[in-house]
Length: 229
Ligand SMILES: [Zn+2]
Image 1 (cartoon, rainbow, N blue to C red):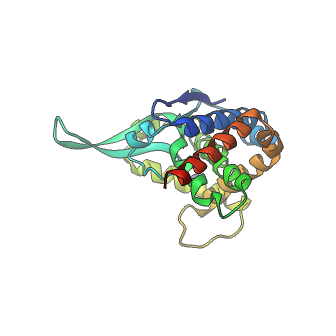
Image 2: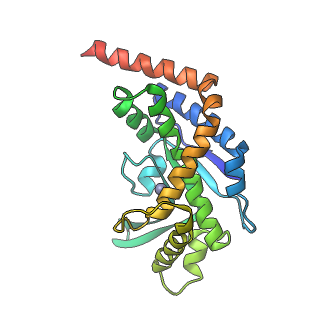
């Protein structure tokens, strides 16, 4: 369940430590019962993928640098050689975790809440995005975005249909949400389930050497910055 890929060339030391904490958390998620029960899927052509990324994949999919994570499906692109627009469509079911974006998000709230809370809420990104990919797999019977696109005559509208169906399915699980949030139900489900999983493995995360090592280097980087000013 979930092949893991790492793009880490452009990470600094603190981000590298956060990557190690993410990988530890990812292993704990795979053993978590709440996750396992949601991850039971009948059919799958190939394993989904999770990318821990240093902006390489974020840039490839034209996502903003402050996106914490995303499920890669499709993105409009421009081909400079042939001067034409085209649609890049994922040939894998894939979740992307933006390591640099998450470290920035921790920095943003580190002072205003408990350090532990800011780190754990960044780590929720991992199960959150994995759940989105599993929602897709359940809806498409394991097909990838490119497979869904090729087997439909609707073009990229096929993706809207899939996300709308997921949205309808998740309705029964979640609290009533504001009407104008188009994907409020699937978002709430991914976020609430992600939080529940992280809550359940919180003790294991916070007592891990990866967590302690990240906190140490993160605090050191904060101190260094203050000195430089
Ligand atoms: Zn989401």
